[in-house]
Image 1 (tube, rainbow, N blue to C red):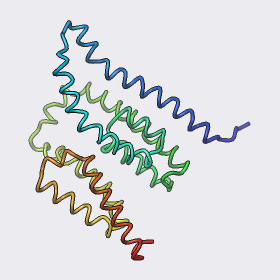
Image 2: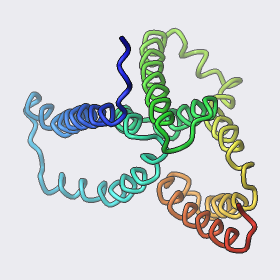
Image 3: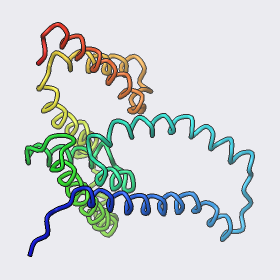
Image 4: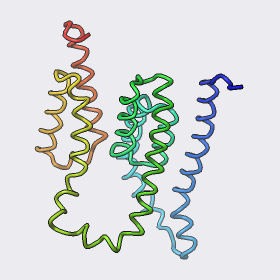
Length: 224
């Protein structure tokens, strides 16, 4: 006899497993340099170590907070644990989850979105590992092809083409809200090219602009 699906129990199990796996991942990442230093007999220069840690934390702590606040509501708990553990959020996991959700017609925050996002991110992670494994095996035979100057421009534009196609289906839903934040990002990146690599900070600014415009348009009756 089929048992009735208990979403609350499912969520509790997801959180237990996710916290355990993330804790193991963090411990492995933090212990790796110390283990390497011990095995190789190297000495850690602690002043330089802490100086480097501080410079990294200044950039990544705000970025982690922003990504957590933005991605978790969109992905749900299960997909978020998988995504933060396996990486490639913006260029693989998030588009995969969005596309799967749209195909299934699930709404953000719903039970369906939670399960579909988890399945899609899990599938994406497995496919990514398989592709990387095959790529490592074929790296040497394919090197002449990948470095061919004729097809190199195509590889340089894969991500812009991917994000452009994925982004358009969301931009077109509300052009009035999209135009100004998008124009702001493009103009800022043209004036300050280094901002291209500061995605998290741009998300804060553009998110604030989009929320502000949505509020103004809603008050004026321009949005439902």
